[in-house]
Length: 260
Length: 321
Ligand SMILES: Cc1cc2nc3c(=O)[nH]c(=O)nc-3n(C[C@H](O)[C@H](O)[C@H](O)COP(=O)(O)OP(=O)(O)OC[C@H]3O[C@@H](n4cnc5c(N)ncnc54)[C@H](O)[C@@H]3O)c2cc1C
Ligand SMILES: Nc1ncnc2c1ncn2[C@@H]1O[C@H](COP(=O)(O)O)[C@@H](O)[C@H]1O
Image (cartoon, rainbow over all chains, first blue to last red; front, side, top):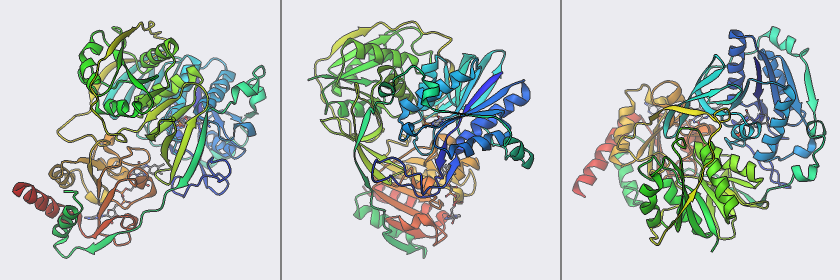
């Protein structure tokens, strides 16, 4: 089996995130960058498949130089090879451009059976890139899976959404995105980390991916930020320590504010 | 006025409230044209309620298999409608399905996509709140028919009854090699509580609730206030409460009038999903808990003492009216 995992490096969500003042894109310079947590779970799912069937796992990431660290981490977990799409022209790329680039990178892998992704990134939170990649590659989208079975040329998944759950079924090749509940990812072993350094990573740019395309048409800006304003931080209001009457005091407060 | 396409969220019998919100948003840009994708006969059933909420036309994109495949039938329907008569914009609810439909549509149209709008003006400028409430951003589509997803709960539905024109769209057959089939559905148990993203009051429990049993205290307060129940990820991961109720960065974003956090520390990823709430109340026994630094009303105390007392007081006031 040929499996591709799409992973993204994101600023650590535990730290403050800022928008750069010049172009309103995410300020990556001061941020701690990590492999997006849900992507680790997509990688884990790929590696579990690799352990049960014979599979080659290619990890694909689009991002600046530093994204190579995210790729190395997945290689250290056990993936076989990487493709790093790195091009300054992709700075601030939107959902559609990102998906077009990722689809082109997946095509480079050749005959694939499964593309695995996270269901949402913690920075963009579009929850949309996998669906668009599926559209562009003509693959069935099996997204938001909290459980996955790949068997006899088909994929079945439990999709979890706000309206409940659905069982999905599709033939391979297919694209799957996983939720944060699907598994607990492994930690890379020391041996894995050492081995990852020798695994092949193909670094490509837009000219490699789209030799015939004219960039102007491809990288056209489709949206424009008119204004970005930091929201004032919330300040603490009233604080009391419960002396046995906090519930009563609270209800008076809520009534005064017409909340009850 | 130009048409504004609105994708209808429904369960076959009833229109979801988020669609009424979309119709209200759409009226700022033009005449709302509601697109119903479903089994034959669905549009006829939903037409009346859509007309009451401001739809001036209803597209029926119906086929026996439209409900059996994930996302692609809705993308096909909207694409057909756009190509037939280019609208001023396409609005879709920013639900799990809606985000995927909108993005695939935008890709096919090579259009600008704006996600998770909380406001929209007549010139098509959209307001978004990003990074869990740290920034307010205003943006605009500059290429193609704007495709916009709208955060559920951000707009008030408005009744605006009028004449409604019916139109039909012929859906192409779905290619089973390029679409996932839905073989079973299990609706989230509806219960009597309002939906998490729609509720005016949300009462959430965290790890401090201590056990699945403990959530009774959270539910009773929510019920007394007519609100929804939420949970932190730690509470969900510990198995105290089901995942669909998770609030935060990887759960739901909520923005109610009143958010009550019981036994929740206030990690940045939790705040990301609730800090745009109008009023925040927190009960935590640790005076150092970060949630107390942004609560409008913070109680340092045991949630098992404070919450039941509050529940009782609310019930007592309700009883006297
Ligand atoms: C990528 C990523 C995504 C995440 N996404 C989310 C998300 O979507 N939502 C989310 O919630 N978290 C999310 N988290 C997890 C987040 O970082 C925290 O771990 C989580 O929010 C903690 O939940 P908690 O406040 O319930 O638990 P804790 O931090 O353990 O806090 C429990 C609190 O309860 C108090 N307490 C205990 N007993 C009582 C009592 N009897 N009465 C009153 N107070 C009591 C304690 O003082 C403590 O403050 C995410 C983390 C990561 C890394
Ligand atoms: N730049 C990127 N490089 C590789 N994969 C990505 C990138 N952006 C998004 N993805 C994939 O798409 C998923 C969902 O992202 P999003 O739609 O942005 O929330 C992520 O979990 C990744 O698997």
